[in-house]
Image (cartoon, rainbow, N blue to C red; front, top):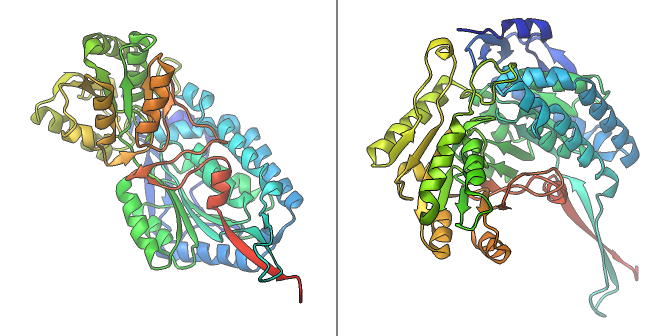
Length: 499
């Protein structure tokens, strides 16, 4: 191993892993687990396995805080002031949390610091939702008929106790998206970070502990499925918001059925990047699509267009430039400014991606490059060399299953109708992108592709615009007013004006 992350860990000196329940830290007396750095597989810390017992404690505290405490009934101005303390705390700890996120998931430091998944982005998301607090309102309706003199009006009330289950790829970003929205709406929260990314989540919990929220409003439990399962199924939870795989989403959906839980499920994707021959620049487009799979989080982003649907007339040129892009990929210490790609989060994820690559070769696709592991100084980490497949049919496993890794599959097309059909022939529908200089075609295809979000000549998400999927990519939207709707219930009150 040519580098160690232990000196960085020692410099940050994070506190030992604990649970945060009912306004206090709990030194867990039960089972614990070790979190490993994906870049080196060195131990980054030990954290409690909350399990059913810890979840019961946290949900009871959140339930009590919602049913009896001041938070759901607090005046808008007062709740905004509390949220501002959280926002200020995140800004103050920004540099520390960027570094903790690198230790958590191996994200290159300069990308943790400078992209929409960093601490500043999380603070901005909290700020966005805090801004809604005094604007969450209902409506009044005109008297419908002469049959009765009734006045109808609606109010938005917090949905209740929220179980927020976070992914490993954007632990700070999704912390803001779920917890910031829930608290701003007056809900109480039990948050469970991914078992792979506890360091920055615990630092966020410390900020909440210092912000003087009423006890039980914010709670955090840790662990893997033995914690997430009881949380998503708990009868004391009114709503579950999860970002994760479609398989996990299925289990959460089933677990919540018996209690009719409200659900926000932001799940997997097999997004299509459709490249027309009139794209502004084939080289730039190819480098963009390949780069989304090969750099940053190395394809471990649910909205990544992992299917490049490319017009046959520019296919060879596209592949040539995609191949050139990979030459710029640099693995290594995530704190090295030259590093621009992340490892897979775990050995298990490495095995999954390598297995799918082997499946692609076995089914007749052509592996143009990559798909193996670097040895030498990187052998101790979870690294996979970026891969490109050509001669891919849309019925192949690699075109249908989510890799969540550094692999791009190129599928040729001849006509616009064929491109749309290929894009829509998927169990997923989270995101996608269209590359063309014909604005009429761009809108036409964007409307025809069945997906929650579509980018034209670029793709990005922001806190004030909705993001989410259809089909196996999930239920509901996160971002802007639709998130406020997701964390509130609509109550209708009618008044007899003749009484």
